Image 1 (cartoon, rainbow, N blue to C red):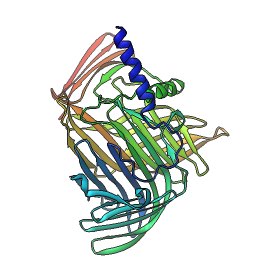
Image 2: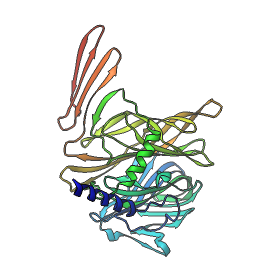
Image 3: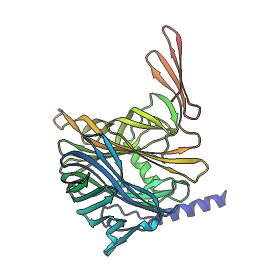
Length: 416
């Protein structure tokens, strides 16, 4: 027992000093030589048509491999063009210049430092050139709590710029178009494993985030539901509102429904406001490869104002799948689609003001050999409803028990 206490103390000490706990969004540009790192841009743009783009340059040393994510969404035709390149040799990505602020991936590249960035993509029959100028300041997720996020027993740092102006040009279908619009920039790096998420020794970020969560917790249990939703996945969205605001949203699914681990940052044209007391509900979704993907989410955030909004995927999705080497973890799935958002906020004067806009939604799920499972009981009017669902068994079962008058109803179906 004493030996265990000594080893635990040593682990805590190592974890406390082994990771970069700098909290301010500075000196984040360039190449960090981590196990994983990516540079990302999302954009809503207008040329002769209406489009959106999501793209990332990424490397990971665990396999090792390099990936170029590049999806072009045509809002007018509902076409989704997957222009990416996945699972390449890690040598496909390299950097040049002082502090490695130029990243190359074949004929595609990015360069720059805050507040100016350029992304250039030359893939298949598309050429896309985006010049970004940051309008908002940069922000680390959980910056006031140290700016370091845990992933299993690994860690990462998540830097984003929620609003940038965009100008540039695209060539597709043999035609060149000048474009402009609004964009989002993201730079993430750290040391964690998708294949074996419990490798590592990260402890301090959990302590910091637990304190933050206890200050912002918004638990709402209208029953008890346990599911396969796990913290190795995430819900992510970037929203561009019609009034000029932008919003970054992130949520970590949890095994117990009704215990939200989520945050969003609203840029209102003056400053970035953090919202930590959040409740959300999945209003619609699809079953895909043994997991559940939410496609419509209702969110309520409380901060120095109350904000309510619903975001809904509204486009043919882009789906990325990667097999995992773990015995238990079978597959990593990224499911993304742009869509629309609507809602309102309560102003300082107590008045209700409507919000509309567009969103880019991305769901990541780490799927186990057992697929997606859910079991629980919820309160209904004059009774309870018992729910069981399993993609492994291709089964959905509901039992409804009501009182006054007493009745029991069964509902059985295949998931399909």
